[in-house]
Image (tube, rainbow, N blue to C red):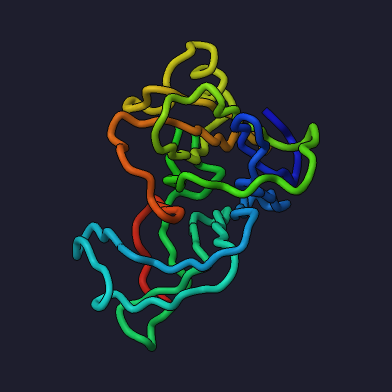
Length: 214
């Protein structure tokens, strides 16, 4: 576990060190993270508790050029850089609402990422302030990463009990970023439910959907 304001997250896959993500912690506790390589992002699907599943063309989206960024604001609004809306005049950054970060105690899944087969080889050396997810012992097949927030006590309890962070995992590797009384964990895992690699990163942002400027 690291306790810093900024870190990079790498994957170790024989024989290479691979770029994955970065994370920043603001003074108010807001946590911002993103991918460490260029690419385009666009919202493809929304699961709304009131209206159900919505996707284009009913869902209006715009492709964003550049690496995807996720912002978990201390206020409880969690955002992607990619915009979406039910109409062109209600477009806003994709946003979900959850608890204020300071209120989170029990482990809460904040985001989940399904990884493609190939990631870029790292161009910088890892430092003691960075996070390394060791995947060399992972069984063959696609990997996904669950990003969670919880109290430091809950994290230490799970680690001490040597319990799985996710029930459907057949393999896990975990590292974490400490932000005072809380911990943000990156759980790289092989799920019994995943059989095929996606051709791109698939990112799920967990929370109640907030539409437009409401």
